[in-house]
Amino acid sequence: MVERRPWLDFLAHAILLLGVAIVAFPLYVTFVASTQTAQEVASAPMSLIPGPHFIDNYRQVLFGGVGGNNGAPPVARMMFVSLVMALSIAIGKIAISLLSAFAVVYFRFPFRMFFFWMIFVTLMLPVEVRIAPTYKVVADLGMLNSYAGLTLPLIASATATFLFRQFFLTVPDELIEAARIDGAGPLRFFKDILLPLSKTSMAALFVIQFIYGWNQYLWPLLITTQEDMYPVVIGIKRMISGGDSVTEWNLTMATAMLAMVPPVLVVILMQRWFVKGLVDTEK
Amino acid sequence: MEKRVVFSHKTLPYLLLAPQLIITVVFFFLPAGQALWQSMRLEDAFGLSSEFVGLENFQALFRQSSYLESFKVTAVFSVLVAGIGLSVSLVLAVMANRVLRGASLYKTMLIWPYAVAPAVVGVLWLFLFSPSVGIIAVALRDIGIYWNPRLDGNQAMILVLIASIWKQVSYNFLFFLAGLQSIPRSLIEAAAIDGASPARRFWTIVFPLLSPTAFFLLVVNVIYAFFDTFAVIDTTTQGGPGTSTAILVFKVYSDGFRGLDLGSSAAQSVILMFIVVCLTAIQFRYIDRKVQY
Image (cartoon, rainbow over all chains, first blue to last red; front, side, top):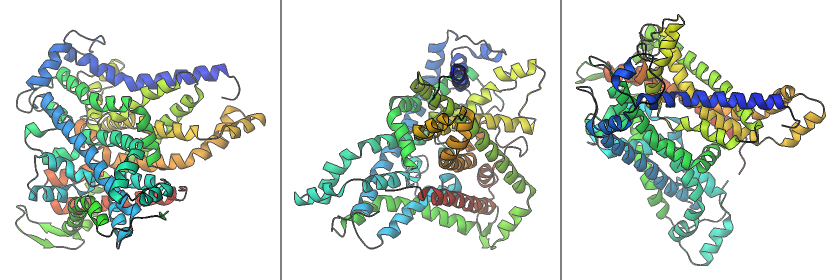
């Protein structure tokens, strides 16, 4: 800080290391559990050294599926479903929000503010609050157990539109004046000037929405009944639905590790944009 | 707040808005309207007919002790999640702000839980605390605490709390750190020159300047505790034992999809909608005053 206080610095590092340890502990235990056999895990307490079964467990989980009747399909399939879902939600949301924000900011037309508020209101109600009727709508449209049903209702929220609107408002007017002088129409302006400027916002939003899409639980739980449409987070829950069979913790933990990899990778690799995006979205 | 220079096209903006509007109407307004509609009807067991009953569903709800219990559980849960989560992350952020070397490494190591799905968080902590094989559970048994969240309501609540807070600390930490870094150093230095100790400086200068961030995080944490923790609860305790971890949103799910009592579930949804709208309105009203374009 301002003066040199060595013991406070030491305390700071100590607390931070403790925090990191607490945060990392479950991850470490999970990793260790995923490398042992089921018996080794069940013999409490489990040893804290990684075991030798890394390849076996992961291969079985990825391609073989787990457990008898309340098991789950091969994790590779579920990871694929999750990936498609997360990418569709992220890209879909960004795409329609760019268009809507562009329309609201750069044009004047009747009902403009009315439409804007309509979209804005969706910020207030997360999907958990309207599960039953949304389920009915999706079922009526025949979209159960489909990628469309998994993703469309989740694109209906306005976070991205709001962010892009705020960003567009900060773009200098000189740019659009110059574009008009050069004879460019709105779509040209959008493609050649606005989009390149929005790259950082798009990257930040992509991270947040990808994670949001990948981690969706309640909604896929409701509308998927076929096992091969389960995202990976639902599959994990199915593996521990105790009942008659004993949970094979080692395989479940291997699945958990796999389920964590893509979003954590996205966060760590795109950390800069992610932090900027989170902090700026709310200001 | 408005652009001076705009395009003059008349139909193009409607086309641009159309995708989002269509999706919003079909998947948001229609269901929300239906929830309101259904909350005032009573369906028979097979869903073949329903009759309009006005506010009876709501009245019945408030007479139900399990619903009031759920309110209490949700309130306790969200207060604890927000309170403990904010305190812990504030401490971490203050420490991270002090440290010059390794700050970005600490940051990376502390924010990755944000990426973990709440469902996976639930499974992780369920494993650690599993009465038979969990490492922590066994350690607790060794020191004499009989740990079984399937039987003890308070322990179930503790399990769910730890899992939810563990995940949310990273989000709070990020925001607090950003807030701390935006406080001008000159203020701190002036206080130091005047002889204020670090503790004094924190409470009289840093903390008040952080209060907008803290308030914003408070609302976000409460909304998180209300909704996003559904996955944590469904994977760990399924609202049990009894109703000791049945938060409101979980009850909406179990009454609607397991109990098939659609009217009551819809009424609960409407009440939840009302609560969220209030919370978000407060948040936006408060934040909006501080925003400049």
